[in-house]
Amino acid sequence: MAQAAPTPGSGGFTAPSGLPDIFDVRVHRVASVAIPVVLGLVYGYWAAANRRSGGPITGWNILFGFVTALAFIVLCLAVARFAPLLKRELHSLVKSGFAGAALGFLYSQSGESVLRSTAVGLATTAGVFLVFFYRYYTREDGAGNRIR
Image 1 (cartoon, rainbow, N blue to C red):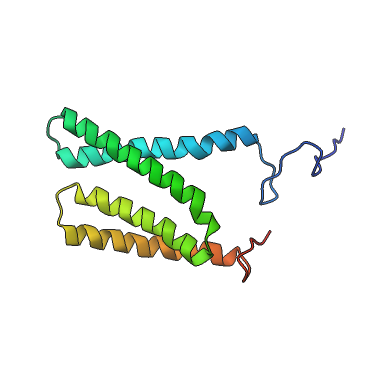
Image 2: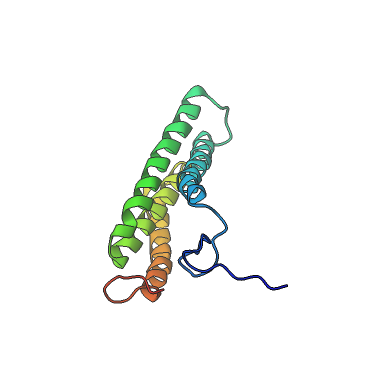
């Protein structure tokens, strides 16, 4: 027995890629906040663990972890909200700059020098920029409109 496939406008959701979207709009809305929160908590724990270098957990270490997590969450939500409004070059640069700064900060908490942490952050920024720029360049036309 054959069944008709859902058509646009018949109640079936379709993703921008044309594939069926199995999640509701509410799930995407919750995930757009929940994912940065979970990443921020993991990042804060990681930064606090790097800072204490295997020593005892103190109240200041826990506070540092939560403040770091809060800063990461706020910056991640801001980048996710405002970076897509920029042209593809700046869009790529903002996202890669965030990734490079985040990794450079984590590296600096392990006790390494500022110059080495900066080099790690810049190398990460350059690598992520190339990946993001290629992705946006191959999926947008000259005016910055997404190709469907």
